[in-house]
Length: 199
Ligand code: GAR
Image (cartoon, rainbow, N blue to C red):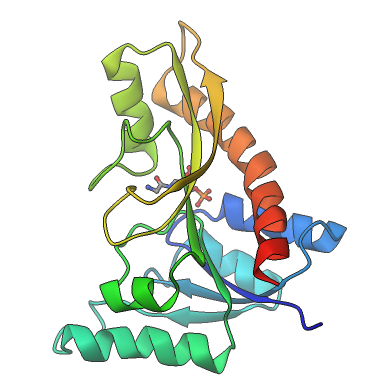
């Protein structure tokens, strides 16, 4: 039986990407991490891909401002087809995916969010902004959510959630650090569970 091919989509530091690669090296994840797609060619995730000899494809609206939505989506689909991608894992990817791409990969795209959805999700709710909003709201518990991706920000079917405690002296950075530890632990585990169902 052939291994699945995963494409990571990332825009940021890439610590979740790194955790996924570690899990692959340990044999927890069986799929091949075939590709990184990014909208930010300068981001940390690109550096991590290069160090691990993983191909990087930079696809950004800014590079193709004149293209129709259809042609722009085709760029994604052609790249994913070239690499035989079965499964897409968003790891700090800050852009909404083209709707036809979501249709093409229905139930085969997942995302991780650093809070307990459906709270603290939606447009603009990413990275440190999420932790700031959580602290400002006064809630005493936050967490992580892993979910399928649909056409709206953070609205797809929830696969997994885990609570993370908030301490009275937390600021957004200490909270982010604690939440990321949970992300790094559980995202690879969920990927390894899902890949068994997709085989
Ligand atoms: C992670 O906390 C991830 O949950 C979050 O961005 C961070 C990326 O960190 N994603 C979102 O906020 C999506 N709405 P990383 O680049 O170090 O993995």
